Figure (cartoon, rainbow, N blue to C red):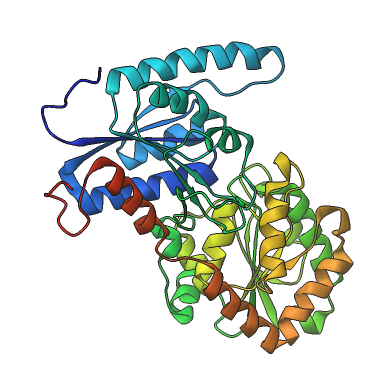
Length: 376
């Protein structure tokens, strides 16, 4: 039997994997719930025991618990057992009023514990194709929320397309002149954003550099680059740029991505769910090079946007400096194509995903959106 919270606050437990792509949507939802309901909610996180997750959540100020990462081979069984025991302890001791899982291995054990206790559960899928954890949990979840309308072909009434919650630092838009002034780059040059996700991509870094080596000088004079390389590849990429005759700004990581997006004309990027929705909110035409592994999530994400005319997709096995150069020149020279991509992005991306997801949480725990001090 569940205990009572004498403060009358609603406890919300959010579980998300240890990557930025999982943590930021969960954190964005938490911030929306606190903005909307203030001290009527108490939020705690369950996440992977890694440095990135702990750093982001410590900075956020929200309470969190960690469980062991999945591990490989023999470590998997051991860590699954440890994770299950710890998850049971967390859920049984905190007794949340609602559990929200953002996929990944981390969400599974606490989801099971919450279900055993009869706690209402929500799963959120960021990608176009559901991951293993969410495919299992969808059969028992109280509510299923999706970023892509194609994620689950079903007529179940407990499915809602909310979109993917995007953090405020990435949503915030600036006028192009101010953004470029802040970065110290030209107002007039065609600006290409290059990035490979929160950890960077050595494949994209290398191919972009190879392409720039062969671009004709008259074309290089018309362009500049904002390149987010990732920490591991930063020094190598920096050394390569110093041999090129092209204007560039290079960062290992950049937190206030709204500034970067506002300064950019097009992007060359991986196709993680958070990244492509951030690009979509800013209506930036993109060349998407999806990571080919991890159940092909990124391939399906990129394919969805490409089919809708909102991006150009180059799969990694087709990636070369020639194919990349062709796509870049196409976007530079065909203004109508850029405009149509921007229009399609505006139609595909929900700008109020966090609000929609918070609505679903509020309904399950009995908090009224219009007057959060009155329970439904």
